[in-house]
Length: 235
Image (cartoon, rainbow, N blue to C red; front, side, top):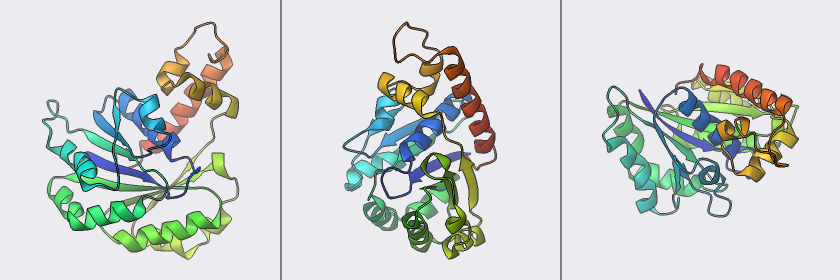
């Protein structure tokens, strides 16, 4: 089954692009076809790291977002239907919701057998809780909700865990997962290389941004542990 994955959280700096990159590498390593879309006009980090798989799209134009849905009409590989990853920039919830509502997208994709996943990447702040509540109120029952507690953006998620917003999400079948942080120095090196996670752990070039032996091992371990979490999700 194919899936449409909106990687959101609405606010900047919560780790949406990191999750998009992780999911892209997961699909690659699992041999699952996918198409990526990057809605961030200023940083385009998803496109930068996975240029062979992702392309930019303008989220406040229906013509741009229509490309996302059109991906499911393309002829799939034999026995496989490709999934889609959409890395949502901050403050894109309103135009996205208008497009989904006006296009009656969710019932259409349901008829096509496409699973729709709204990923809510959360830091430990109150804003993320309020934005989760807004997401649930916007779409209600139907799509899947995946709430990601990003430990790279906070360590105490008690407020989220005790919130009415999360209880509402859980009542709709939401999955709550935890994303461990990747060592900061290693992530900075990967970012400076503009490299996919695969390229970073296979780069043995003698330059200052190449990962050392133990750094490569830590990235491999981080990917392995993250993949075990992703294996449990409706992807």
